[in-house]
Each structure stands twice: as C-alpha cells, then as structure tokens.
Length: 147
Ligand code: CA2
Image 1 (spheres, rainbow, N blue to C red):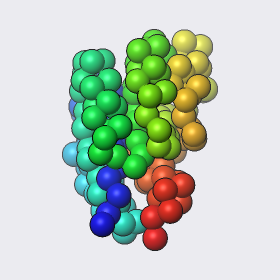
Image 2 (cartoon, rainbow, N blue to C red; image 1 turned 30 degrees about the vertical axis):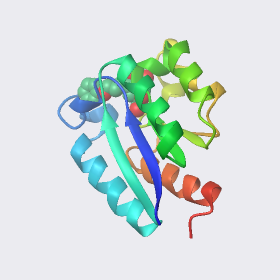
Image 3 (cartoon, rainbow, N blue to C red; image 1 turned 60 degrees about the vertical axis):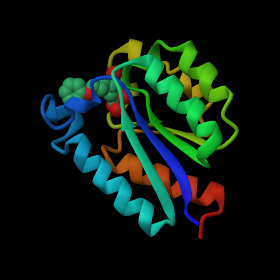
C-alpha cells in the first residue's frame, strides 16, 4: 500500500501564481498540488495536500499526521520565522520532515533568514521554485524506503 505523505502549506500560499510572480513564479497552488500528486504517484506515495492561513490548522494537521502519515513536506511560509508552536508540533511527529521554501529565504530580508522549523527538519530546500516540492518528495521516498 502507498505511504501517505502530508504536504502542508502556510499562510498566503493560496495566492501563489496570482501575485509577485518575480519571487514565487507563475504556477498556482492547484498546479503545485497536481505536480505533487503526479510526482507522488511515480514514487509510490499517496499525497495529502493542504493549505491554511491559520496557524492552528497547520498544528492540527501535524497532529493528524502522527496517526496517518509516513512523512511531512511543509512550506510553513511566514510561520517559519515566527512559530515555536509549529516547531513543537513537528517535534511530536516521529517521521521525516522536509521544509520547503519556493524562494531562497537567505537571499531575502534578514527576518526571513531564520526558521524555527529548520531546527526539526531533516532537510531544507530553498530557492528551487515549486520544483522544491518534488525534490522534497523524492527525499522522503528515499528516507521512508518507498520503492
Ligand atoms: O519562499 C517561500 O516559499 C516562503 O515560505 C513564502 C512565504 C514567505 O513568508 C517565506 O519567507 C518564504 C510567503 C508566502 C506568500 O506567498 C505569496 C504568493 C504570492 C503572492 C503573495 C504571497
């Protein structure tokens, strides 16, 4: 049976492709969901793809993933830089976690250079555009031993 992977997206990522294409590209979040589902099926992974603007939704989904998911890909968006609560939730998840940022946060404003989530992440991908999600899935497949 395919392993379940949660792909979680934080605040404002619902605007992907609609604003600031010079930073985030032209693909929408629906496009990214499609890419993940396609990539996931090639890697033998079942993708659960979600986005919320609310910190508590992301935390609740990480708790849910404790029971149902082999691994997590997370783009925490602005909560990367602010949320100890999200870090605490991820610390209670036993499987591998890969953090993704579409832009290279290290080339941007200083306040984006630190991520609380990175203290838990098994890998961090930044600046590879939406392709970063596929790279993250590939890494999770390898960490979880998916054929
Ligand atoms: O590069 C990334 O993926 C970020 O996680 C995106 C976050 C930002 O706060 C992080 O520092 C880096 C912002 C997501 C907002 O996405 C938008 C997309 C289009 C238009 C406006 C916002």
